[in-house]
Length: 152
Image (cartoon, rainbow, N blue to C red; front, side, top):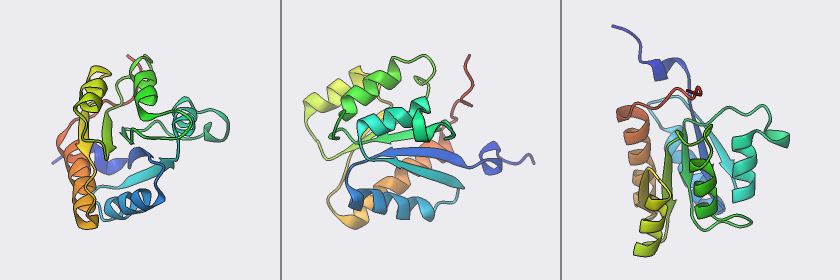
């Protein structure tokens, strides 16, 4: 039996989240993962784009296999970050999961119109939050076949 491709290389995840508590919970949930992963955290939209474009201190960072993006961010909000990712030929194939507290139909429609790969509402309960992060990880990193990141 061939080894799973993802078991050879860690999955690179960029979490774009300005709430330190939510970042800590996501880190804890992913630490217990079956899959080897590296979690990077950007605290605002500008930092996220610098990471993705490998600008400045992020020049040696890997290309993420998955971006988990909050909508309500300082400096550049998540909708702007999503639009920029999906309009860039080198970044648009990276799956972007929206993880936000907003349940507004307008936000849901707008992010899907900007080509978000899925929209998940953050639960307020800590245990539920951990379950949500684990389910994102299970689905996107275990079930879904991700592109290898090379330009086509």
